[in-house]
Length: 333
Image (cartoon, rainbow, N blue to C red; front, side, top):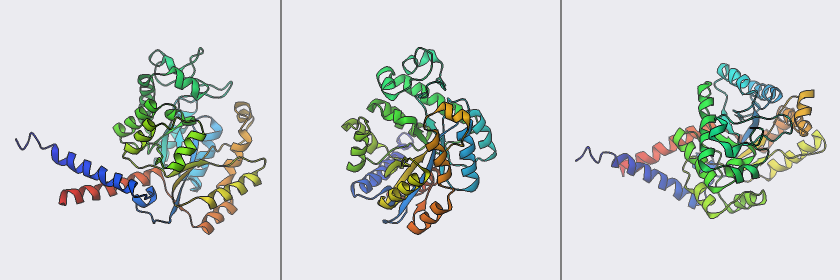
């Protein structure tokens, strides 16, 4: 009888641990506090998106990792230059890299298809067999099962390439296009034990999601609240501008305005090339973003502001450590 119910002890401990985290959420603590940072700490993740999309993105991210000027990046597994970055990663496994779950191929001429066989994900691809160019098409065309098949294929390809993802995030926000798609994304994060790009659904962040066109329904909010792994308190992008100096000034204003908590600042660094100019009309902004965090004025600004930095790997480590303490406390009680 004792053996038959031996599963109850770890299950009760896990439930108690999750309940403790839920209680922390209800108390208004930021995720920075829950992960052991101070109540007034402004913690940043400088996160390079779209690595693997093209050679120019890879070169910029690799240089930033070499100099230590960014904390994290995520890789677009379906893209033509994924293998190039995967080869670099094998020589630099300490880099904090995640899977940039990619359900869209947005550029006019530079396109990519799914990792899964097209016949298994027909609702994700257009007449040319490429991933849809915009999120609305994905939301209208794909089934929950097809999305799960493709996300799983991307994670498995990353793992097979020797990458140990520290997190899962989302290209163009597509995994939050529908509540059921978000549920699949969060379910796979738990299955693979890889923290997902998820936001604590405070009123501020719910309003931000709705302004940006995401269906922040009660079902979506409930999925985010019930997801137990570490979350961000907020996320934002590097501001756009008409010159590098304007981008930098707006960035300074952004950081000054940040309240305590963990904020991921997303940017898309690329080195300048004629090929990049033909891929995207946002090439200039991307090259400015490739200058930003190596800029001595920006580095000094961070020191003056007293911001702290973290990574997804560090968030996961702190979460496991805290969860272990909570479980030990529940068992002792």
